[in-house]
Amino acid sequence: MRGSRPKRRVAALGSAGALVTATLIAGAVAAPTANASAGSGHGQDREARGAAIAAARAAKAGIDWQDCPADWNLAKPIQCGYVTVPLDYAKPYGKQIKLAVDRIGNTGTKAERQGALLYNPGGPGGSGLRFPARVTSKNPVWANAAKAYDFVGFDPRGVGKSAPISCVDPQEFVKAPKADPVPDSEADKRAQRKLARAYAEGCQERSGAMLPHMTTPNTARDLDVIRAALGEKKLNFLGVSYGTYLGAVYGTLFPGHVRRMVVDSVVNPSRDKIWYQANLDQDVAFEGRWKDWQDWVAKNDATYHLGTTRAEVQAKWLKLRATAKKSPLGGVVGPAELISFFQSAPYYDSAWAPTAAVFSKYVAGDTQALVDAAAPDLSDTAGNASSENGNAVYTAVECTDAKWPTNWRTWDRDNTRLHKDHPFMTWANAWMNLPCATWPAKQQTPVNVKTGKGLPGVLIVQSERDAATPYEGAVELHKRFKGSRLITEKGAGSHGVTGLVNPCINPRVDSYLLTGKLDGADVTCTPHATPKP
Image (cartoon, rainbow, N blue to C red; front, side, top):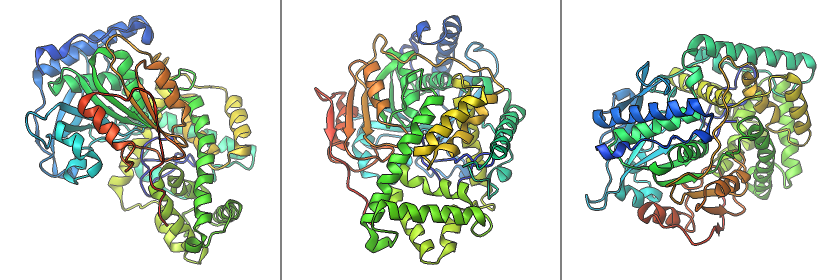
């Protein structure tokens, strides 16, 4: 399951996996820690040397900042540029790719400036290029940090403007309706398996040269090259969702290069979780947060008329699902499309009211509102290309980062068992990830995330009932990064906490970014305001 912000009208993978689309001076190129034990030994050493060579080169070259191209939709004073990195860090003089970066200068004085703050929004597959717009839109949550930092966004390798990869024709990718993710028969499962295999083959056919290098450690190395190109001795980093895993891997490979790091909504970095088990854990957490949303809808029955209990709301959902399965709404919205639309509610509190409003209209007889919200828009070719690219990167990174079960019986057993009590997401998530079972590129061993020499205190922020990145992930990273501090938003479950207004959390994030100071102990905060109907 993707861990970045879903977009409206996102397609499902193949026939059914639900997709959420939801990121120098000579002294700056101190050789990265060749932390061989972090990864796989000799190859890791070669890649560490390659990263040092690439960073030195980037430090010398800098970034040729220009006004952003018109079709990037990033208005002045945001500036854009490129940073060149090796496709394969073991061959730093071999094939190079260009990564798109953008920035806006700090809003405070020269004396107040503390360097660049780099951002990754998650995914894998999310673009970070909108990050500087938090300054141009005068987002109050980020006003204090913006005084001190240039806000720098980038498209990770394979994403958007950075040597983008693709696995299938985008217009085909978004076509609807897809098959119901929940299989009724062995024949349904065989059909999904065939689609997943074809998708993996499509990735190889369209993007084969990139696939072996589409990994989190390589993106972490890219991050270090961008740091060097910016002229920064050390990295200031904000990572949300998958961005927390990117930060965890960066902090392990380059502990002495970290200045400040905030990780928000944390992927469990344990090697046992990356990535197969992490996706199964999500299915459980999604079910819990789906129920939280239904409880809220029931409490606001006066507005939505969807039932006064969770059970009544669930009954209406099941009825809607069955209706759409029998005859897709508007000819295009079946169960797969419904899941793609409704899953934004368990992801984000900001989607609670809009999702409930559309559901309420449907129950009151207005089917069109739901069709408009959940159907793909075939005329939005740019949006569809972006959705397909995001899914391709998601799949490539997760499949290449780690070993996945290749035996279908393992998948069948685990997902059948989970589906019994966690039916909302389980099978949709399984099909989305199944290409990893037949992945054409060599699958790697995940980095052993741990504290290395020079790693400063890291600030970890997490809501207790997060669906996309369950709470245990934050606890695990906290254990692995010594000196880190964990802020828990108790009773809340929105994915991505630092962007929300919470008077217990926002000043602590500001204080850490501005002074480097962490609380003396972990902190538990009351939740941000519950959405209003």
